[in-house]
Length: 231
Image (tube, rainbow, N blue to C red):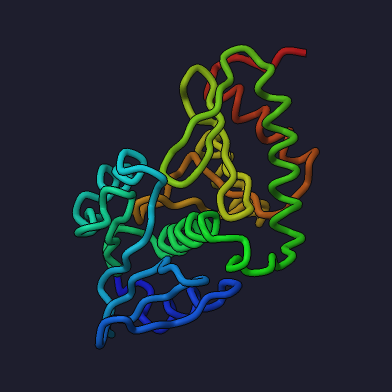
């Protein structure tokens, strides 16, 4: 597949609050926030982007395990969680954008307060996170339910198996394949992809609706865990 283009990725980076383009080495484009780089784009046509993919090398190694042919440790700064992610390969464009988001947020969090950009209100994003966090808090009171991490997402597990998480402000749940397909066909949910392939038992629900999300999480919990929720 062609993948995201150099100018598209650059535009996505530059749309971040306080982001600006620099060329500290001739022909090598980077994007900074404040005085720090959060994306290494190199020269056009870009074939990879360098991003901070985790707070530690161990966390960033999840990318290498998931995409061994398209993710590699960056030279010199790789030990601090920086990876080079190849575009046009197995990594879906939406996961590349999520990785940009993660890198930007990580760099901003380490900037001195005077260099941090003013926050831009994001009502839908804030609402999705608020609703999800409230639901998670309730689920953590259930037997066998725990929090974990998978790539860039915090995930909700039952008996150590993932049943729900939030991705790009969408609730993602695991349901029987036939039901998932019916929801997509009815326009109630979106196809969920990982590693460039559709996961037939997973759907993403973009509309923020606390009652609907709670019901879907309950169904996913029952399907994955094999037991209905108590109460």
